[in-house]
Image 1 (tube, helix red, strand yellow):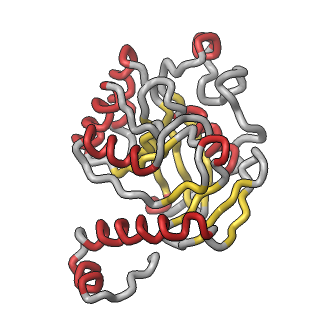
Image 2 (spheres, rainbow, N blue to C red):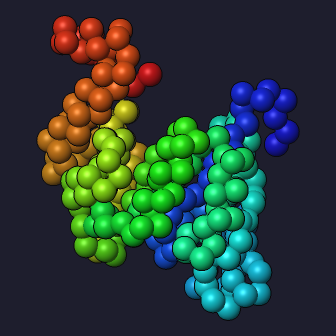
Length: 236
């Protein structure tokens, strides 16, 4: 899709320490947007991002890969740079081209020094970013633990915009804290079914939404006034 308005163009980087799952996330984004016809996988060598022979053999990212996708009338240039320490200089150069980044981490909240370095560089560049917790269906941990541990390590304040439904083998969807709607996974092809929030996570979702609204209000005087006056703050 050709985009004439530069305001609808984004250059987004995937940042993470080695082995966190950022390339797998990139493959899922490309597939969900229709930029690829099948879900590429690092483990079987079908990744369109880790395609160099040595990357396929070692199953790691050795150099920055670039791809493009279209999403909701926006053109997104996706950058997948290395995460292992020996190759971080290339990642630092690639970050110069990014307008924003998705920081991929484990739900345990445990971070290696590579993650701390990447986050520091993102701070230096003033990059807008969000954190994506990968492998929620496999690794031990929780949203609360991840937010607490990462906020402490990265010396920042992280707030949730989604809440998981279930954990590990029972992880089956998320609650969007903006719309306050639940999305339940339908199989392994990325399809979801939107529905009301399950009763089991309703209270948790409301608690995290309050924290989100409070955090947003603190950086916007108008919203802060409305928040303190007890007025409803819309998703917009």
